[in-house]
Length: 136
Ligand SMILES: Nc1nc2c(c(=O)[nH]1)N=C([C@H](O)[C@H](O)COP(=O)(O)OP(=O)(O)OP(=O)(O)O)CN2
Image (tube, rainbow, N blue to C red; front, side, top):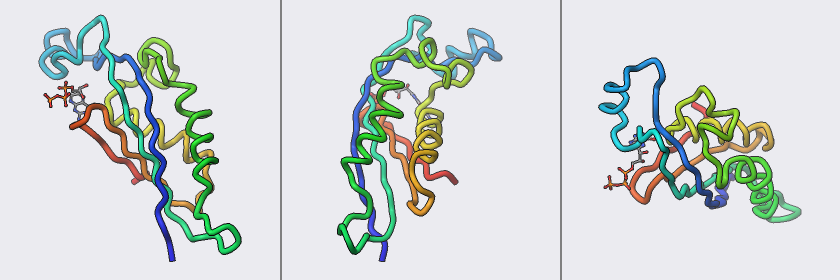
């Protein structure tokens, strides 16, 4: 029997969607207001889902307090209140779209969480725009 546990977190970032290999006109056409050269901010909602067996000793799949600490130490401390393009190594050369941010976060967390747990990331960039990544 496998059960899913979820932890929701929240962080704020500034970013600019831009591909330096495209012309200014093309960037403006593709990314619109998200291409603003002076950046803009989002309130990101992050849901981390782990699926695994229930430990008969604890009744836990995974201690959600421990999961919260892992996310805070490895993701929020790195990205919260940062300008993703300017302040982080991860997005110096990677366009900080919701998709790319989700993959980066998944890769960070995958290193911290035993492979016996299936890991899925859902990232809300706005209330209506969100992406999901499970490593596939
Ligand atoms: N595939 C993607 N499409 C878009 C991304 C993205 O990361 N991946 N990002 C954006 C913008 O950065 C942002 O998410 C859109 O902002 P906005 O248009 O303000 O979206 P809202 O949901 O707040 O507003 P609506 O009026 O409901 O559209 C764009 N596309």
